[in-house]
Length: 566
Image (cartoon, rainbow, N blue to C red):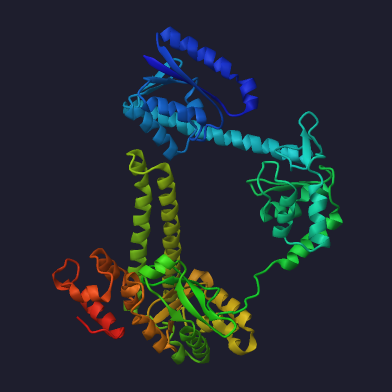
């Protein structure tokens, strides 16, 4: 039987203690005693919790080339302490190529369910053992830190002596800290400008260009005035003084931090807009919207709510002058604070059993969406194992789905909290007014920037539709407060009409002007219909997908844009 030997240790220190040569010698002796032919030897000095290792990758390539019948290792934990997805991938590679896993005295056939189950248990035990090793290591590191002994890679300005556990100044790089401090404190240079000055002299020890991130790290690191500070995964922070030979004084460090603190905060907005701090999304396609400036600052400027990305703006046209929204928002807040009857125009305050049923239906729908996304996450692994997706595609899709799952989970909590609050009669006008009380006369008492920041705090998110937007705040106990704000008439209709009839406009964007729903827009594009004229020329009634409701929407949008209906 053709055998590939795989040997591994986690660190260089282990290589000396648990010699790779000793593993190789024992495995070679065992293979010879079984009459197996050794066709390859592979080794790693790396963690068993990582799939991407040079030796293991070479072994898997060798397996896929069909050059081996059994992989022999001293113990299965040398081959794997992997997470479930990585372990399944490794197993599937071996199984698909009819390769067994062997240890001295034991052979595991992955086509045998009982043997595979035992192999899975070994991997689980190896993972638990790895976590125990990590815990022991961290206990040792914490104790070493308390004793004032160094560990880990020191800053480039220091050398570390393993024998004494002490640090000394690295003369080659020790000039960096005084140089940076002088430019920052005495000349008032920014992090980026200091990086630029450093790049005129040299690169980093790794041969890379200096960046503002490098400079920031140098300016905020406490090691340079002698302090060793380590924060561990259990949340404990241990601080020990006089560990490093100081390269700056404590006084200079405090001066630097005071300067940095003074710079903290958002850059002052030149043109504050009420909704600048609110995360807006499109009600048609669900993608992010932003406030864009148009015009010449020397003459006049206008602000529009549009998609952040140009390609998205082309496929889902949104262009709402901010003047159509800000006045309505101010009026809404003033009306809500003025009285309950006026508030009902913007906030639903009265709930009956039908409303509660609708809320329960929303909860059920959101829960189904959550379960559906969780199901999609669970189905990712088979796609990966079948080779349909690469590991990069798997990771990317998993990240997207996990973000979507988080949205649904948060939404579910909000809806459930709202339902409970309504049932206990705590969601009422007084609760809403108490939340918005801080905004009373805000348009008079606050500066434009303060107004913007306050609205962003009260309403962190919003969804924008053609004729209205829903701004969402959060009452106590995670209960969502939704304000329905009407979008006013366009203050510059002539300008938009001129743009709609511009004969030289890019024909690929013409149907975007109709502001169709995403489904209808995609139906038209998939049918190859890019312009309004294409819509007129096509017999939509005879095409699949263009039912009565879709045709009604197209006619309504054509009419609204001053085109003849079909």
